Image (cartoon, rainbow, N blue to C red; front, side, top):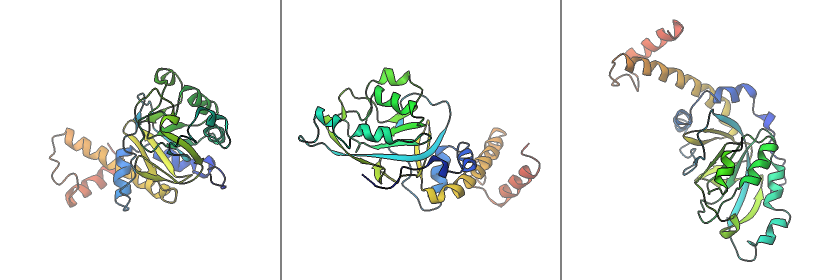
Length: 245
């Protein structure tokens, strides 16, 4: 477990967060790709229920390791530090992201822990392992993105190892405080140092794609439109100058 403080949600500038809420995870992966970041989308992680809006927040990380018989017992739940301690350390305004190692033998989260995270003001919970008590979780307010459902508990295949430290989730490295963007396409991780420029470029990319969609609806070919040739670039600038009619 890291001795560093938990990520402060206020460290994510409110204007940057608002910009990112306007940008799809699909667009963000392209913006990040242009900066050389190819591994930003958490593979195998999907919303348990359809999300009504995009969620943006700093990562609070929790780590599991492969289960071992002397470490993965029911009594381990009561030992400290424990997974329960990590749940209690998750700050309001964060997105809890759990390294479940893609393990499918058991669930990292159930309805009680999800309810506690919701009560603490966490924005969403993300894990690359399944969850359990799915029907009960669906009735809670906290969005959960996961790798499906499984009835057994985590100790069937995992051992809690720590929190607030760098982890891997869905094939992506996640540092505490990295910016997570969650929508119905999944979860994208933005290195916190890039967040402001990615947000700005993402908003611009979304604007350009609105222009492209408008031209496609009018019957335009995508050749020379997306990606744009020089004529399209000029048409786009003119459209922006006219107030995006």
